[in-house]
Amino acid sequence: MFKDMEIRIESGERVRDVLPLIAGEGELYLVYDSEVAPWAGEIAGAARAAIAIEASEENKSMDTVLSICRQLMEAGASRKALVLAVGGGITTDMAGFAASIYKRGIRYANLPTTLLAQVDAAVGGKTGVNLDDYKNMLGVIVQPVFTFLTPEVLKTLPERELCSGAAELLKTFLIGDAAAYGEAVRVLREGRDLGKLILRAASIKADIVRRDPFEHGERRVLNLGHSFAHALEHEARLREDDLSHGEAVGIGILLAARLSERLGLAETGLEERLRADFVAAGLRTDCPYPLECLAAPMAKDKKAADGTVHFILPVRPGEVIIRALTPAEAVRALIA
Ligand code: GLY
Image (cartoon, rainbow, N blue to C red; front, side, top):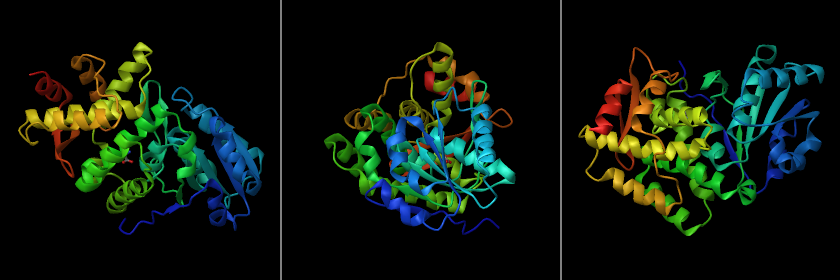
């Protein structure tokens, strides 16, 4: 029933290359992160109105989504309007969610300005906001009409953000392309241009989402490292520590590799091999909290059901398997 879902990835050298894709839009509204106002400014002339948001985890809330909806309403946006989100994953998640509920749903498109959003958050139609301390607890899966990828935005991206995105890039290749994984580690180590690898990662993700848009099965593999990552981010928020999503994902993948080895599923030494690769690629690899802290927030993750979590376990680069375990079982195996 959901086969052949349209997932459109477009690309161009510069931000302005998106203009032909939106040329016919009579009612275009930009929703952009104020941090990337210069990029939004490149295309603002094509929009009827531009709505700025402060994109932070604290502001990733229904209040911000309602404010976007209210501004769309005040600007007179009809059901024909297209919302174009310009920013990182927080922006594309919130703009997509606002569009998906405004007047029972209008179209949206993404112009991600971070590496993380280009290879993950802005592809695949997951939208939403946090609820209290729990990430992405509210939201819907609605596909953007397109996601436009351009390397131009990465030129001004801070190193730490680039490394966060690199974790999601490597995640995608660990799931589905061993050769691209090796190439990505080399390119990151040497600080070379990621252009083609970004398109490859977005296309691997798009293929998975086309086959399982609502995450009933195969799409779960895209959560490699994420059960641990969300628990680490939860702990970081409690302690008011600064840990980005991508950093947590990198550490989470290493924990998943360790778990996979402990369960006798991964090839021996996988965690150490990945750790060496991640260090070479500039990723953060130290787990900042005792592993015992992770079980309770994992049990409350929105993906937990009947007390178990589907852990995505790497076997070797390019191959993962899914195992349902309770968070307590997983943490016990890690500590053993
Ligand atoms: N970020 C994982 C997914 O989109 O399914």
